[in-house]
Amino acid sequence: MPGIDELAAAVGRAGFSCTGCSECCRQVADDSNLVVASPPEIREIMAATGMAWEDIAEPYPDFIEDEKGKCYTFAWCIRRSNDACIFLEGGRCTIYTHRPWICRTYPFMLEGEELLISECPGVGSPLSPGEAQTIARLLIWRQAAEHREEECIRAHFARDALPGGRRTVIDSEGVKVLDG
Figure (tube, rainbow, N blue to C red):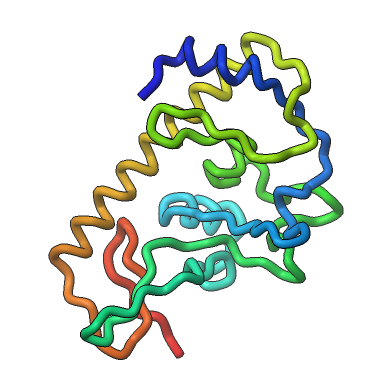
């Protein structure tokens, strides 16, 4: 994991200021706008909105089917309506203070020690050193949260029985069999 000062410097060099275009919340052309969310993130949104899990999240759409007839995926996504996040209203996020890590750190992400930057109209705008430090901290916290989620998923995948002939999601809370 890169050091926070090194990461903040890289973020600062890239620059970013949200333009409010909400392209990251909508599917634009062939780009996906899937917002992957962990169970703790979904539960935080549930607590903030009073909505049920199934109204907030849907299984990540790429399922794996093995030779034993087991069909599974490893993640949840925030539901979309008309190719936009269900929490996008009037070009603004209705759950902004409870939004998932991926939204908090967009357009940046860490892959190992490499800073990746998604295409976004706000990239290249000046960032103060304090803003770059904040984004760097969020990126490091996000990466740690994603690693914890992955470790739990691996543990459940190794030890929990998957039902044959049923679609399931394996997440940090266990194996969830989907209805229908």
